[in-house]
Length: 143
Image (tube, rainbow, N blue to C red):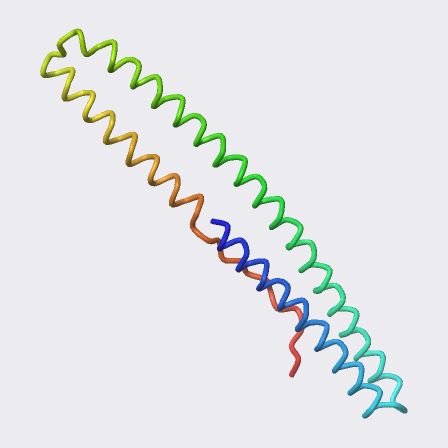
């Protein structure tokens, strides 16, 4: 889970760096090729303002990503604690029940419960750990 978060964070940092480069490049091209055409210059500056808004959006997403990571970590800690407590209780009950024989029906039910619990826990773990794809709409067409 941590590696997925780190990869997403690196992607956002690279995107922010790319946006900075694009912004500087566009400013340079504007100054170089359109010094006398004020209408075209205003249009280009509108694009630069849009680029600044996109950068701000990326920063907001990065902050949300950090918050999500912290919440996932807390959730995983709570799940682990609950699982450990449940395991301890089951072990205590098993030790106590070892002195009492279980019927065949009770043994089957205990095995099914254990299998279902393991499957659900694995499923939850896969959902929490699976990296989420982030889709950011393109608001600027550089061409």
